[in-house]
Length: 159
Image 1 (spheres, one colour):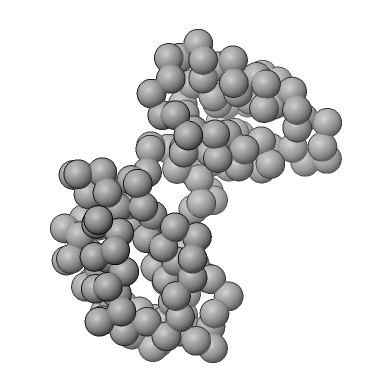
Image 2 (cartoon, rainbow, N blue to C red):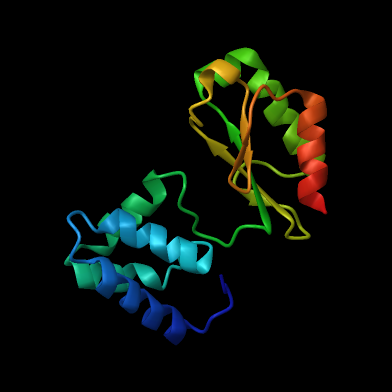
């Protein structure tokens, strides 16, 4: 993942990704996922390229990027901590854990710590409702989270 590519390289790589995937049925989501995997976020420079190649408006592409919570418009930190915000997790103390995570990191949801170490994101279900509250750190899920375990996760991410 290289987030410091010149605009021409972003355009070139976006064209290559679109070319590989545009023959799929409903290619927009797979293309956006691949672009985010490549760059760590969906660069603004990619949107008009995708729109042109898929014969969509920029507004349609931008609408999809902003509708789905998994897509980022800015680079993430070295680690991404996702806290489940679904009802089951909220009912088991998820709100308290979210506030604790924000306090420990000194940021809000959709923000990255000033040192670039951690991005905090809400997620609206990790599929662990019976083991709530839950979180995901760098793709690894953690269930039945309590404050002590959250503090351990945050400390691990800050390293």
